[in-house]
Amino acid sequence: MRLVFACLLVASFAWADVPSRPLKVGCSFDGDCVLTTFEGCCSGNCCPHTSAWLRSDLEQQQRRCAVIDCTVPECTSPCPKVDEGPKVAVCVAGRCEAHDRQPRSNPDFCASDAECVSSTFAGCCGSCCPTQPFAVTRTRAALDSQKCRSIRCAAQSCEGIACAQVMPSPIHPVCRANRCVAERPEVVVPPPPPPSVECRADRDCGVDLNPPPGNACWSSPCGCCPTARAVPVEQVRSPPVRRSPTGQGSPFGLSQGNSANAPSCGACPSPGSAAAACAAGRCVLRGR
Image 1 (cartoon, rainbow, N blue to C red):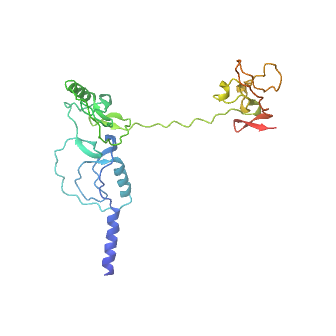
Image 2: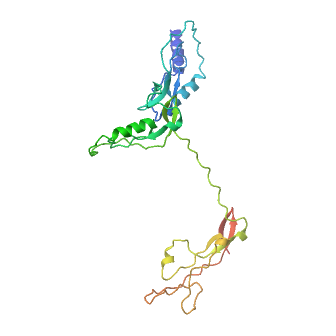
Image 3: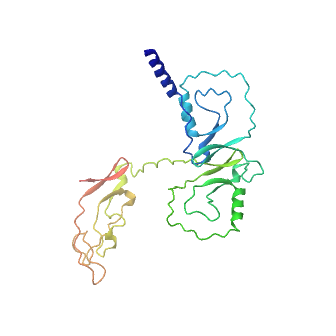
């Protein structure tokens, strides 16, 4: 009894190590699919046939197979001759499928990437819902356009139609196996900008008494009170404050306005004494 149980346990582990062929779903573009004769880690098929797999699934399965020791089948009989033409992997409704290559006379035939374009054609009368871009030949796109010229479309009523949430993403139409397919363009992430260096020594910094740009005091008839900020020395400006018409009072007194109905403006508080210094390439304030 123990021997039978041990055999069953070993068999269950061996079965778990051999991945079954996954359901090929999840593709968005033809470029997500690939042709292969792979049928599993230990399929034992001497005459495998060509099929289309989701590229990520195939890579994952083959990585698992690399650590599994399979018995090599003895293949002595020749494989039957199958009259199959060249294939191409395509994405159909989220599934990878192997289709025959297009003949040269077919309007979907391409010989170079320049013959392929991106399209969102959803029929001559359009669609209420957005369409994910796909790749077609210029010939096919021209035929669709020509066909639609003679069709008169009624106004669409899209009320009550719930569209699937589609985020149109850019594609790169290319010619693969004489068929236009959509590949994801390579996204080049730009390197982060180098940290800005405002200064290298304390002498490179100064104290600016101007409030930041956009401050409401800039448009006030009373003017602005000084606000100490540490900036690079070339950005230091004269403070935007004005003395009273008599010229008396604090040098930082607010102006009395520029009209007869100007408000009564009080004096600004003293900005105090501050010095600018350089710390880690940035100008900072240091009180005295």
